[in-house]
Length: 372
Image (cartoon, rainbow, N blue to C red; front, side, top):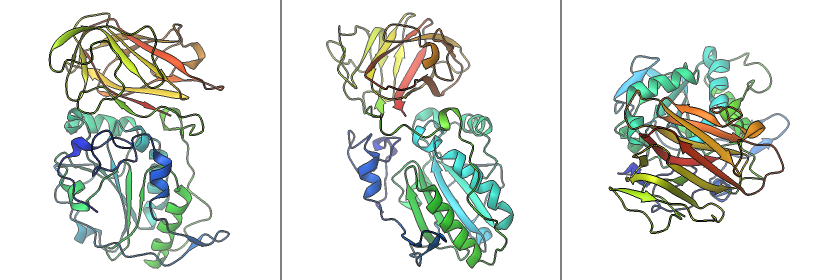
């Protein structure tokens, strides 16, 4: 794998860091099909062919901090089967894999499995260990977390994806990887095989029990036609406000009368930076013409600790039963931290819809839309 010196080229999708900005975001199927898979020899028994040797487990010494555990070294992990899971806490693609990672960690912990979450941040605020700690507690993550704020572990692996999973045998050799969502049964089968090879027994039948709820529920891939869209100047696409963006300066924006699918616009006084758009006065709006079951927005207050009220509309009306977990039926919500907010979860039929969010207070900072 290619070493990636700058994470800013990455998107929180199954997207290669080696690609230029504006690469194939929102194209998980083609990318996942291109990734080599370990074939099943016997679908009934779940036995696998001989697993390849993909190299030695790189050092974890680049971690800037550890959560839920003292620092772990490759020497201390020898004799254990290890799962290394690269994540960043606002990434929806990783978030939908989390129920499976939690379940695997819990089911096989006493059989010699060690799951390590390597938190390699995408946005600047994700470098704050307190944000990572708060998010991990909220998400119920109890396994060890290597805080990789300087991306040294990321670079040691030559990793290019969120989420990315590497499975290591008891001799410290990487035997399998998975980039992106899905293939959970195959991942567990690899873990079970390596545990048995290391001497574990009585693993129990079947797959780990998984309880996915809320934002962690799998995407409705058949209806998903909107890609992740960034609101900062460095990676934004399909920005439709007349006059375009003026980077680094406050400006009065307006929305056009109509938006094409997957186009977005600002209205009100905003300052567009490299990572985000920040609201300079109350009443500003963001509009997005989308096609998906779920709509999320990564956002937070410019001033840490501030609370910012907002209201969302879908086709000009309160969302009602189409509301996401972070708003009520009237579309009311509050920004209380820097995180991913689920704003819409609608039922079928899924069609093109106009989403709007109005901020009743100034100081909101919006980073990216994601969908499911």
